[in-house]
Length: 500
Image (cartoon, rainbow, N blue to C red):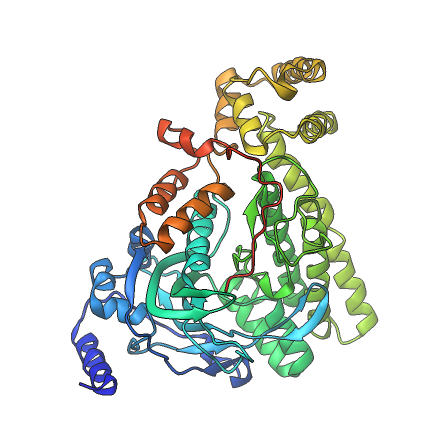
């Protein structure tokens, strides 16, 4: 039977299945057609399910058993369509390492907007499903390792209670992908509140026109900030809300030692979710200059620069909204500047609360922040592990080496303990705050690489065990202790790469 007639039969079979769980309402295609392009399916040779996120599937209202079936696998591999799906790739632009360029979903396909049983709306997108009108010279395909990496890191972020896109499945395609070497092809099914990026607004502002920018802004407000719809100044209010979300998000990243790696404007979600897990990683040894991305040769996106870069990106977003904020450009700039001027203080305040919680302080004062910074300086000096130092303090299980036996730490610990007694909080309350602020485990680079190496040899047990440890990082179980161990040799030169 030819592929054409086989796929027709599959579509017929799906139409006969009444309980797939897919419940699409595709609002994005109501925008002007310049914002997206229909994309044809490019079936793969031999799709096989590598991993399915049962918990996420259930929360979306999908039929998990159906997704595991041959028909479900064909949907998540882009071999057949779901009736009522969107099947579009989105257009956007962006500043990449400071330079503006036209982009778009070069290997991604939005199959539809799922309405969940709780009436929430989520994009379901295939990543690595083939060429699109925005692929330029790319093949539109993805590789198994990077797709599994995004699955692991995004689910770890969800466990850490950090807003994030999530991963529903990874499908191996049965086809080779040609990069520097021949690698196994794969497709990730990604779930997001939306895929509207800062770069989507840049595209509308600089490549379309005022009316289309307004339609995008109104659509974004209706979808993500409906409480603003009737506001007289809703476009500056939109900017204000995005500023608040980003100030919270970047503080949470910093608090767990997460380094995004490529904070271009096209990699920033308008709704405040972490998106695009390419060259990201978590810091082991505390060093504010840490960079993991192989292409970030100047440290633009280093750990210590993330707040400043998010601020820079917010300025780029604000520039796109100026015509909507006020018809007088000078007045619009003044209004936007007033909003933007609040970001650094807001992000810094959020970070102070996140970080001081890690040492048991509920309402940080200037002296408490000084105390925290004193600890961080010591950690950097003695090259202590970021995550495990705070775990040691939480459980009062201090290793008898390095920083912990130094006179300066002993003096610091006395000051810290005295500070905790001044809070009018019980020891149990302090312990609970620290326990719930300090994850027992993060997706350490050597553990992620270990899982990906095994997966490339079709052994997925290593990855599944890692995911189990990461699913509730604040559980502090015995099982998690193995995953808190440091690599046998320091990974000072560890590098990550854009997903291929």
